[in-house]
Amino acid sequence: MIKQKNMQALKERRPELHSMVMNTARSTKYRLMHSEHPKRYPNLVNNSNGMLFYDNRDPLAASRKLITDKKINVPTLSVFLGMGLLYNLMNYMDMFRLTDASFIVIENDPELFALVVEYIDIEKYIRDERVYFVIGKKPEELYPIMNSLMNLRSNKFFAKAINYIEEPAAFVSAKDYYLGAVRTMNDAVKEVMLFYGNDPLDSLIGIDHTFVNIKEIIEYPGISDLKDKFSGRPGIVVATGPSLNKNIHLLEGLYDKAVICAVDASVRVMKRHGFKPHLTTSLERVEATSKLFEGLDEEDVKDIFLAACPVVHPLTYENFKGERIVVYRNFSTFEWLDIPKGTLNIGPSSANMAFKVLEYIGCSPIILIGQDLAFGTDDITHATGSTYGEKEQQYLTHRKNLMVEGNYVPQIKTTNVWNTFRKFYMKDVAEFKGKVINATEGGAKIHGAELMTFAEAIEKHIRNIAPADIPQQIKSFLHKPDKTEVLDYYEKTLSKVQESISYCESTMKKFYDGYLKCMEYKEKVADPYKENGVYNHETGASLIKQTESLMPIFSEKTFFYILMHYVQAYYIRAMVEIQGIRAGHDKTEDKNNAIMVTMKDMLAVMVELIKKMLKLLHILRTVLEINLKKMKKENGED
Image 1: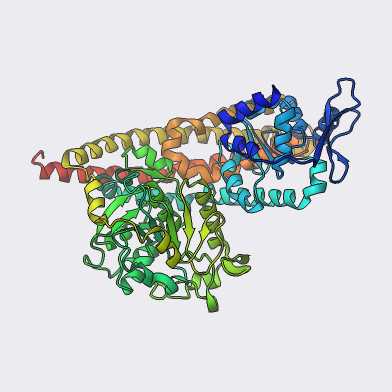
Image 2 (image 1 turned 120 degrees about the vertical axis):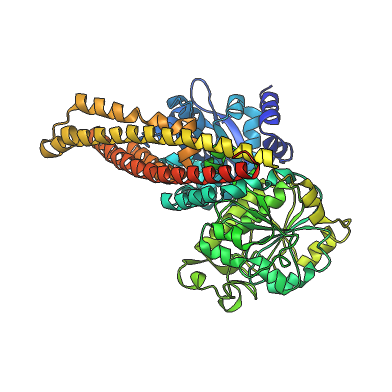
């Protein structure tokens, strides 16, 4: 009966685990036994080493003591290393009754999970959306899972307050695995903080470019027009790694069989060999990216569609003389604009973007070439013919180097930046429903992608594909807004900008008032406490409450759409810092003082950031008014 209930829950809520249990062979590795407790709670024995998982006198009490001894102050994000009979999870959730929390259970042995499913009633935990089971994963499979979990809900705010609850018996048998899981979680935390935690001014540049590029956004078609339009057709990502020199010639004859999506830096390299992609991706904000298209004339880019994110420098659009397709990243700024074009969850590089574009339009398999993400022979960084040379100086002089697993060698040298791109690839590959083939003949390993030569990939997956006029198909699917639609978007966006200016002015005043409350707290509570050790609890509690009353602003829908992408770097850092303070073991008074200092600094920064946003909104309003007036004049409405 217990197994039937558990299996039904798995089938309905966690089909992958249901399938895993069905396919897991049982052995005599583990044995259940009754404990000495009057209620005869089950205990578990690892027959391979004779170790009991719990104190046999009272297994549940032993688990509870393990958790209590950790003196956890912020229980919101917890990782259970080894599952045992799930007593640690059961006790933890009973001790900390949280509605908004994440409980991550990591267990390396599928056989143990299958045994628990058979004999222990865990149905409610299987059905609980706060519980995440990571069972039987190889070490190299953990990173994309941990990265995705850290991106869920508010988990990233607790980066400094992660609670690790280890199952002691599991550590004895698989210590390296679980220590590796902790390192992987730490890596995922760093990457998530890097993704969200860029300098706000960097985000401001992206917003500035987006506003300047508003004409491109309004007047050109979006990637949404191509969703799943190329289902079943292979896709090729052409990056500019050194190994591209080895196999770029094999693109001959593939133009009408596979959708070729090149990163912006590859267009010139492909031209040098007499090839063209169908699509090219670009998402860097820097002006240097625009030089990748400099000197390419209309004939060079004929039938090539620039699938760019509008955060790119305006010169990137200006230098590209061909057609455009607007591709949004998952940024709130684009949601605020409310001009539908299609949003992709894009990683940090144009190659990561190319992969997501091909996935979005339905391609499978997706074949990667030139995706070295590592140095080539003699520290070569890029393929011959690259705009900035085969040895791009920024990778040779300003990057931290490290060694990672190679495709064809045990270890290969890469940079921290390339490794970030590689990790995002691993996450994207893990989430992709089709097949990914890494035909990069060199470079760093992307776990989850099948490794083969480009020649093999062509023979197996492209050679017998029916030819098609792919550029013509792309054109036929795209809908370029007509004059009426364009005019309507200009008018709606102008109205939205005017409303947003009013909202930002109001929010800035509220944050400034909050900043003044923090200063009052410093003067009336924190400073006297430091001087004489006396803490004014009544005044302190009142000022803390008034300051914390501002926090719901960050959850407002309007704030999210207009400001969150811009301010999130500082906001997330502040929230991580605050949760870290709360998780510590200092006196309550010291914690309050530290939190109010963080709040004061955050609110002061918010005021200055919103001032800068207001300047951009005024500029956008002017641009919209000019374009709108010009359009109306052309339509004879002036």
